[in-house]
Structure formats: structure tokens, C-alpha cells
Amino acid sequence: MSSVDEKIKQLGEVLARLRDGLQGLQPAIEAIDAFLNYLGKPLDPEHPEIYDPEKISWDKTQGAKGPFEKTDDVNNAEYKALRKDLAEHNGKLTHGGLFYWVFENGVTIGRKKAQYDKQRQPTETAKPASVAAPRDIFPKELADMLTFEESGEWIIIKPRQFLGSENFAKIAAIVRDAGGEYVSVGKESHFRIPRKTS
Image 1 (spheres, rainbow, N blue to C red):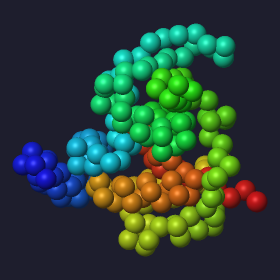
Image 2 (cartoon, rainbow, N blue to C red):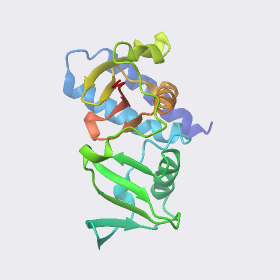
Image 3 (cartoon, rainbow, N blue to C red):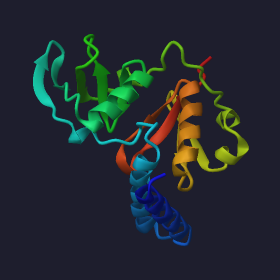
């Protein structure tokens, strides 16, 4: 680990301890959580859930189904992280309220406003979690860090506390194995898994 990464890690640990002492001061907690999640980016480069698509060059265009944006900004680090995330989600995902997909050429990425009634359907390979016990797919130490709530066809999973990059990666892997995903929407970011309907 480089000296810069070590300093960032130390700062993250200090902020995490400070956050624990701020219970009841929600705005301060949310600001620290946002900063700590940002710090997770250089510490956890293997998990592209943390990136900013707005730093990618997008071109507006018109398609058969309406307007959308596309990019082939292949030399951009944020593009590379988005492309990796798309590859891990079979070429389609929702991020920050937008639906992203990869064109057949494997390079161009398109995006448009997410239509949740269509895009939030579980995939055929999804292994839905039981509504009665979604906590059971997580080890106890991870489950205790999370809240679970049912919302339509999904179980919404949010952290009770700062997760850190290692726990975030473990939770993201379990969620993906259950057919779910991480939805990045600022303060409302969460994991979600399809609930069993039969």
C-alpha cells in the first residue's frame, strides 16, 4: 500500500470513529458517510460500484425508443469502471436513477432515465431470497450491520453504519450471488435483492 493510500486509510478510520460519536446528528453522519464512501474508491479498486458516470463524455442522440445518451470514452477511468460494472451485470444495470447498457460492439455504452417498472425485474438466473429471512443469506456479523425492508418485488438492504471497503465488497458479492445489485442514488444508495414471489 502506498503512503498516500495509508494516509487515506488512516483518515477514513479517524472519520469512522468520529461518526460513531455523532449519533443523533444525522446531517453530520450523512456527510461523513458520503466522504467515507468516496474514500473507499482508491482503497477498493476491484469493486467498481463507486464511480461517477458524470465524469464521462456523453453524446445525446435519438433512438427508436426515444432520446438517450451514449459514450465510447474508452480512455476515461470512470468509463472503465462503469464498463467493468456492466460486465459483472451481464451488460445492463441501474446506477444513480439511470439505466445503462452495452451496445453489441462491446465498446459503446448507452444510458437513459431508468423505468423501474420495466428494469427492476429479477433476471432469469436470480436466486430470490426468502421474504421471511433475507438476513439468513448473510453471516451474522454482516447482517447485524444492515437493515432489511420489503418494497414491492425487492428487499431493500441499507447499512446501519459505515461498512468500510472490505465489508462493502463482501455484502456486494452476497447480493450479486442472490441475483441482486447495488443501486447508487446518493444518500439513498442501497443494495437490493429480488424477493421470492412463489
